[in-house]
Length: 254
Ligand SMILES: Nc1nc2c(ncn2[C@@H]2O[C@H](COP(=O)(O)OP(=O)(O)OP(=O)(O)O)[C@@H](O)[C@H]2O)c(=O)[nH]1
Ligand SMILES: [Mg+2]
Image 1 (cartoon, rainbow, N blue to C red):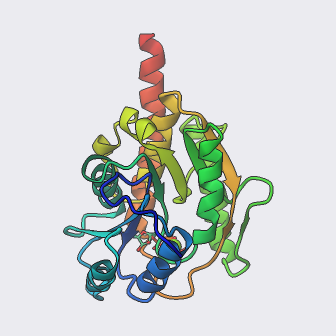
Image 2 (cartoon, rainbow, N blue to C red):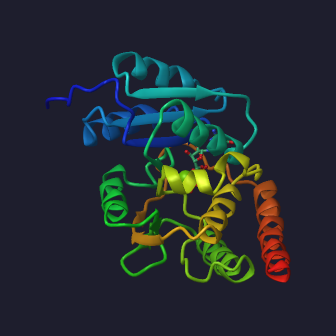
């Protein structure tokens, strides 16, 4: 397929993909994403935390053959830090107009990104690839424990953090306009781990962003291992109550 020849223009869309030990997934994912988005208006930024399994080297090798692929490396400081670094780089260094955040393990189908981007083009500021709206689903291979944790974690978040209008608050597959990320001051989100996603969502929502949900099928990873740990769960619970407190203080002041 012919590429649009405008390599000096800023990418319209930058995929931001955090990785930690995703050597089994990253090359197939980069192949698939770059094939689905063949134009020079797309960039892919992998944010790797010096994965011991050599994920970074695989990205470097791929990027050598495709200048639209970028690698941002840093010390392992958690998923939240990786997202902040990646989104800042996408906005400030690459000049992206839209950021699509997604996981590296094929739980988020790269082919679904087009649907998220279409909803953005139709007027939304942020589109969530959602498991919990009509048409959305989770892989049957999820254990009942994992299902329960995710379902009730989401319900708790909606009520405690005041995000009742959103059904999938923890989703990591989202398309967000650069302007919305800037007004949410994404560079200053301090959550270390998975709580990043709910903090960013809360900031977007309170900043008046038009947030919509697009149903997705969330596939269980076939390769590699989960990194979700107890520390993340504890931070998450503290964070949603902190967000509620922030709302309370704000409403008292106004
Ligand atoms: N850079 C970076 N990436 C991370 C870190 N922790 C997780 N990731 C990546 O973030 C994405 C989501 O992590 P997963 O471990 O798949 O979390 P999950 O989807 O809740 O768990 P599974 O369903 O078991 O896959 C994946 O692409 C991971 O490689 C981290 O500390 N740093
Ligand atoms: Mg995963």
